[in-house]
Amino acid sequence: MNHDIANRIRIDQEAQSRRRSAWVTMGIAAALVVGTPVLISLCSSDDEEDPVVEGQAYANNHYIPGAGYYHSGYHGFFPYRHNFFDATRGGYFHGGTWSANPEPVSNLTPSVPTRSAATAANSQYRAAHPSTRGGFGRTGSFFSGRS
Figure 1: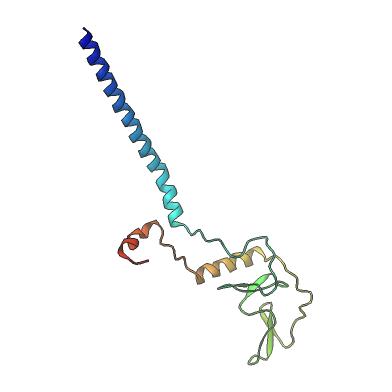
Figure 2: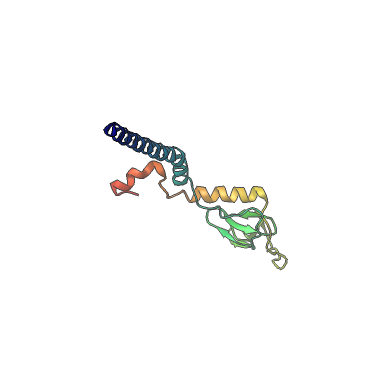
């Protein structure tokens, strides 16, 4: 009888060990199922922040590569500095137009770009600076020596 009881205890311990192993395996599988989309999202998204923050004030002639110069009196970004002079055009650039005379700069204090100007500047910046990150789908390039 004692041998039967000892045998049953050993079998119960082995069954518990298998159940524990199954739970560990299911836990790891669940972590992979839940974690993989997060990992892919983190690896494939552009984590670079937009250079123009909505609601933030910028000084006149603040420069964003690819987007241009901020003209604080006009709340937008333009291709030339405020009051840029072009001899061939015979004028000064401000607010998107050319003028025969420079615009007074004494009243050009920092201002907040319009929402559409901020969105356009960020889009132009991203177009001029494509992401250099490979993301999850390009991990093979790491192993081939290319980046």
